[in-house]
Amino acid sequence: MRNFIISGVIFLFLTACAGTGTDEKYRDANMDFGAIQNIAVLPLANLTRDQQAGERVRDVFVTALLATGGVYVIPTGEVAKGISLTGMTNPTAPSKEEILKFAALVKADAVITGVLREYGEVRSGSSTANVISLSTQMIETQTGRVVWSASVTKGGVTFKDRLLGGGGDPLNYVTEKAVDDLINKLFM
Image 1 (cartoon, rainbow, N blue to C red):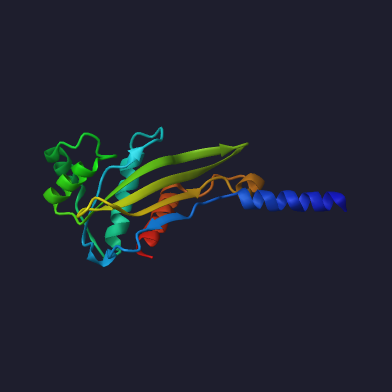
Image 2: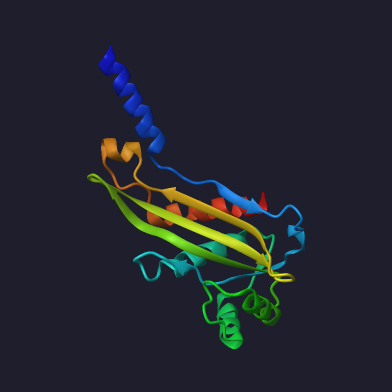
């Protein structure tokens, strides 16, 4: 009987730890998000080993944001041109003054910046799976204030992966799930 109880406790612990995700967000209660029509998504700070991961995730984020039909997303080429013309020293972490100057040039009501913390395959024992961890923030361009911020982590090695083996969900699917969560946190 004692072994059965210990096995049950271990099972519950492993289930609780498997495939974790975060649900963190900040939303300024005084901000009228309906007034935001044009959004510029700046390049993401990429803390991963994959040099192209930031651009891949940014592309998925821009596409999902456009797909909502609620806002216009300034094309990445125009964003790159605006970054160049304003002389932004670090587009992944711009200063308030750089954001205001950039937004006036590209006519953005808000700017989104972010940090990609994890992207790719993780290993736990003999099991592997894909994971993404991303934090984003929206800065409104009249005052330069952060009006929304959210983090998400999706994927990872689940209990099922440990028990049965397997590689988890494909990376693109995990990325889309993470981005969809961020978009939902923005509009809700």
